[in-house]
Figure 1 (cartoon, helix red, strand yellow):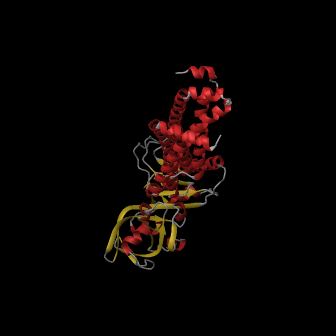
Figure 2 (tube, rainbow, N blue to C red):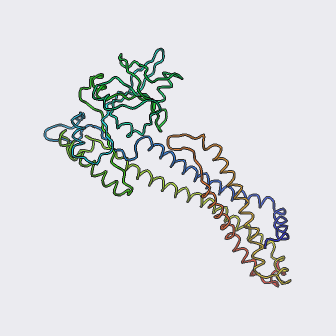
Figure 3 (cartoon, one colour):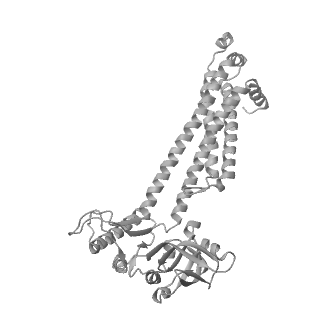
Length: 413
């Protein structure tokens, strides 16, 4: 089946029909090219989603105050809810399974300066566990600690972006920056997987922030994580139970209608994670469907071409059979050509698509599309699909040719 004479036959047939073979090859190559690019995009979207979720702990629960929309106990809707330290303590009361916890007081934008350098950054008053809620990693110094909270220290932890803006190549540890007319000592520098956007923030003790900015005992939000559980459904059930209890306690204290979904807003990352990855799975299936459909169109083109070739070579096939050629040799002749055209064209499309992803993929850094790529196993699978598809595309024309009777073939014009 793979003799030298067979290969000479294949190339001779191809050379006689260069344009037809080229167009058929292009349709197959474009099909595999589109499939690989779509799979690469779906992988890039998953990378982007994972990067977004790396910005915070994957199981974080954030609780924010809102504005009431329903009347309750004589209080009109439209009431702005304000959390306090007491609300944070209430949310923690009776909760033994909390892993990390922190209240948060934010100032969205304030001027911070060091010598002649200055910039506007978000200020956040936090507790020590906030580092783990935000997935921040200390690269110099330390984070906010309990002593900072208890003694209302004017200590500050700055993002790597802030450090570069204000200190350039100079070490920042132990230096003082001016914030709101007060000098804060830099005790740490952090990096965050969220990049520059997350690193353009500074953290100070929440107790200090409440005093410096005249917040009293007000807080902006609170965040918690529970110990991780390997079973997703169990983790979700425990997380939902936890948030439901906090919501019930806070609504009762703050006089928010139990049916009001706007008075207190709870963001549960575990729920969001499942929804996002279900969406990603659906999109991957859709991309596979579109890619396979495009590839199938090319394969059908190969099958049609092979039918034409069998028709054109009817007399030749008849002569071969009259000289004693077995049906399976006729099938092998047609299959060999079909598989060669399909596999060669498909591999060219595959190489071009992988090369494109390899070259341009690392350059793509969008919010929800990061480094689109296709791993080797997926690429290998597409090659196997190609070979099988080429065999199927050629089998039916080959079988039709094998059934031709020599006498009928010799009469063919």
